[in-house]
Length: 241
Image 1 (tube, one colour):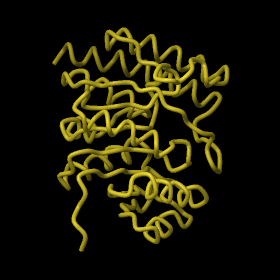
Image 2 (cartoon, helix red, strand yellow):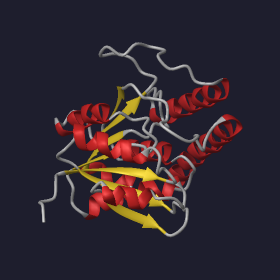
Image 3 (tube, rainbow, N blue to C red):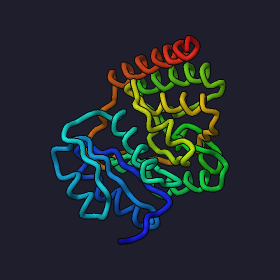
């Protein structure tokens, strides 16, 4: 049996048999020294089978439980297995493994506890306005930015990004059960409350390799409105506790 790596990368997946193999192959090529976990959220296709064929560990739910449960499970696995670092990418091929490597380097160097890959911040050779979201998504992300700036005391441009690198110091906060449809946003609030250093890092992302996003159009706006309300409620409850 091979020794456990110091880093695990987990991939939330739901019916991603078309795109997942490419994601796993790219991770193996770019990050050969990390362990890989696929958190299978009740897929009805060959997602879990293809993941095992490519050497990934698989945590499968018998039925679909939703992204908040899947994300918490990924970080809980990293904590339970005593990894020093954890990465997260999506199963649809949007997140280049080379960009995740950059995030992990930031965390490993001690620059931050968590590095979040952002489509919407610039710098380090990444041009501003390189992504043009749809009007509905632009409205939603703008609302989220304002709400988060009020709560975090700082701008955060891509609060729903699913590309993460985290040190073990962040696992306990990211592994707690989530109570909103956007675990990334709730996680940012928890990390801020814990006093951990979160860095938003410019990255390039691709169009998804196959299938369609589960969050688009009116669903995206509805989600953002719900999460923005949750941000306010979260802070109100913290003040009362």
